[in-house]
Image (cartoon, rainbow, N blue to C red; front, side, top):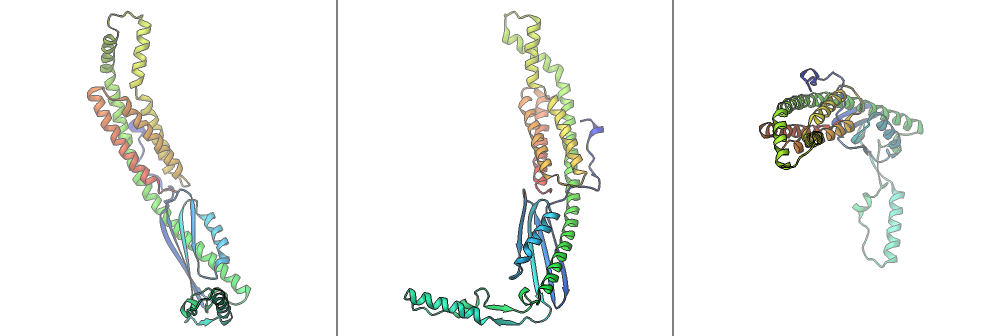
Length: 315
């Protein structure tokens, strides 16, 4: 974790996407207007929610396919608004209303109920009220197919704008995370220096500790060295420092390329947290250097936690 290998605070222009964004697209033609809005927030998987006007249900499979092709992860809310260009005409479908009334009358007689049908409740039932300009009023199948094509085009445009926003947010997020990586790398370099400084003093304390434990017991020099090596290994954090540096390098590389990276970043952060925890468990009792290493390792853990919060929003 030398200064030469420290990550740069400014990643390349390429970066993973953020999962947060909002965009919309609008089309007006053929006597109607269409608006599609797409909102995205973070989620472990791809979670699609479509809100369509009545009659647009047949378009949902095609819309879902487009979404799966363009978005990899995130909770995605898609809302489609459809309006006629002119004033809407409201019509009552009397056949449907009469069918509801017949069913209500049959049930009233069957159960001996005296309640009369509620007119306002009847008007709210599906199919009783029809508004011109809905999908069912657009005319022939060819016209409906043209409308389906326009819906797909409008969704594509909204997704393109959403993608641009998610990329921009991703670049900003990568810059912030890269800055935290620099801070962690600096703390790691300080920990390495302190660990090296503490070795001579620790060796002397280790020798004294062994003499206290052994007392007058005579051990062969080879056995003594073996016991000393075992005790030293329990407090040696050089491997943890090296692995932390390696994880930082891998993390920075993921921040510098486009593509899915969120789950990989989360895994690396778990590993980095593991190394910091191991450093803390090995350093107690090394006097001043040990206390300094503990403080630095706690700072590293704090930065890693902040990175984990940010990584949750990376696609």
